[in-house]
Image 1 (spheres, one colour):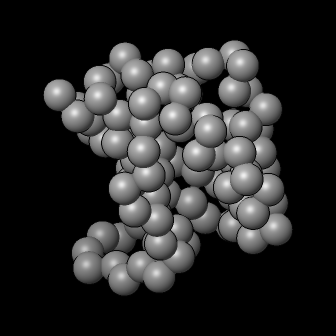
Image 2: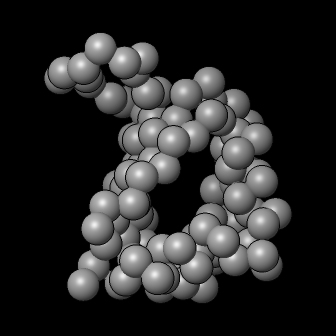
Image 3: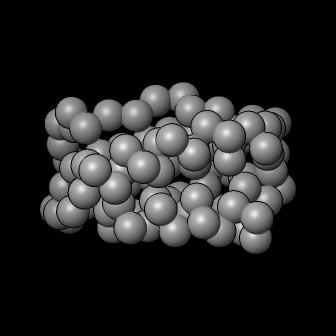
Length: 94
């Protein structure tokens, strides 16, 4: 069953984000993940919390694949690049 990750970012460093994006597709592919959508153009419809500046939706074939992507020690450097690019909140749906 396909599962989705929703990632929300604030305080984005666009230069650092660009460095992460050079490596992100290969990291996702390793665990059969895919980018569904990504946008810096967000419109808040509801909520009192601080608005994210960017949203990303990823898909994975299973929860285990999504967790393997996030906790793969060989990908730690890629996740470090992502974390240096913004303050992230990542949620797994499923």
